[in-house]
Length: 454
Image 1 (cartoon, rainbow, N blue to C red):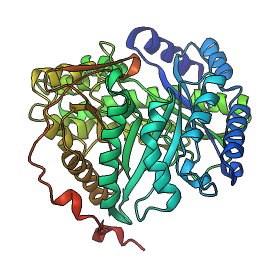
Image 2 (cartoon, rainbow, N blue to C red; image 1 turned 90 degrees about the vertical axis):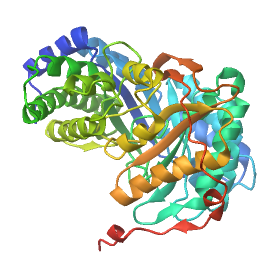
Image 3 (cartoon, rainbow, N blue to C red; image 1 turned 30 degrees about the horizontal axis):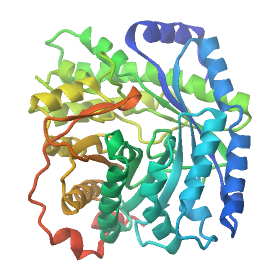
Image 4 (tube, one colour; image 1 turned 180 degrees about the vertical axis):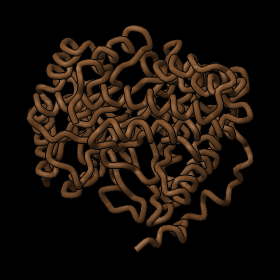
């Protein structure tokens, strides 16, 4: 499927006028051959493997930016879940591996490196346990490392013991970075049905079924989508809206496909997927919330928001899937509060509540994302929030996630500020009626009936 010159020219117009960019180019790196029985040896192997495999990533991305005029905002690396390669070392503290990853990321010049991760949806192994308990210190002591833990799948159900453990880890991570607005928690995500090829942080890992090195690309484009929809008359029906979204998603995705092909060719690695997700930024005009409002919602979070988001998500996938030879990752529309100017405004206005966000996650790509809650929020309440989101993912056979920041020392009405793409987040009111029983029952939420597909 050739990419025509006209498509490139149209892409340049979207870049200059509508904030189009490639949100991330992420190189997945297999660390399986780094397994060792001594911590120092493991860390050396990890550092050497990452710096060798990704040494040309930033340079190649910058070449493509210059030649095609399409900004590539982030250059990132994802690695094999560290719990899987650290099983052979006896150390309780796996933070040294995170520090080795952080040094490697700094050396090659990438923004973030993901994969300080574990998959515990059906049970927690010893290495998984050690990694999870190391997360707070690992994220407090590093700048570029991201962490993720998968606690649920449709086929296995929900590991409720892991849900409670992750609630405790989130709070501890927030406390250890309290002087920086609890930023450590912004680099930690809890998943149901985690995907193994996402280019987006904080949840990117290099899955076990992938080639040794793979380029995955994540597109952006809320600004482009908003501009395209704004051209429609107000009396255009929803079928016309959906068609315009599909047409625009195709054009956005073609830019990602071009970058993906070129990067893989120049790096000499496998071409992975293009993630279709509309990823917002704090910049005015680059907001998924604004797209929903153009579709017709009075303010994001108001009645009709979930319907508009479902339409957007579905049409983005239908349009984007025709534009790439390999679509994957999460692919849809992201709704991170702190990273979206419209979401921030809606949360401050009271139009967008945590409960409405949860309803929206039933039809969006991820889940409760970059949401700040009061620092006094109990472990049980955080565990309940995670469990609710995992249930949505498990029952609906989709990826859902929680990236929540307990803002230590702050309450509703306050703001946490992270800067850059992470933006700022108003501290949202958290329902106080979680109780003390459910989170501590433990065990496993059984797989739903729709998991029996064989």
